[in-house]
Image (cartoon, rainbow, N blue to C red; front, side, top):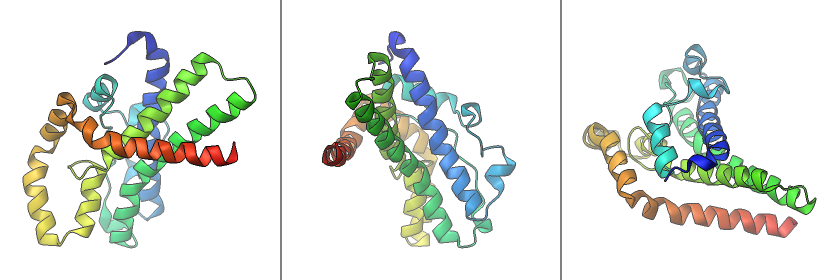
Length: 206
């Protein structure tokens, strides 16, 4: 649960995870030919442009949540399918990279004996929020990124039926999974596997 004493570390880490995730979606869509995120002011590192209040509260309380989805127009993509796949993957990929970067900074600062407890706490929360945010958003539940990816790999008729059924209850499903704690059983194995991989890679070089 949320620890008010750790707000100095958790809030910045949370805002960074959300901002980088949504910015990655926006900049990738723009690069693929869709100016919609630019017109809507989403090509920014200002966290207020990306914050979804309910999603942020859920993330702060339960360590799982969501940001305001970046609106896109796939018809503007030079290649629609490629654009949708790249845009959908951009957010989670950015979070995983940021998790790795935070771990790298922690290791380097530790080697040089300049890692303070406060910086360590911030970097650990940055790693935690980003790795969880990445895999949470890959769940195939609308409106998460995983559902957009699933759309591109399912036959159109199947994708339509799936979204018609699951999409209508997606938000309620997410809230139920998060509030009940069941989400941990889904996400934790993937998050731990990625963190183990990060430790393995850093261990080779450090």
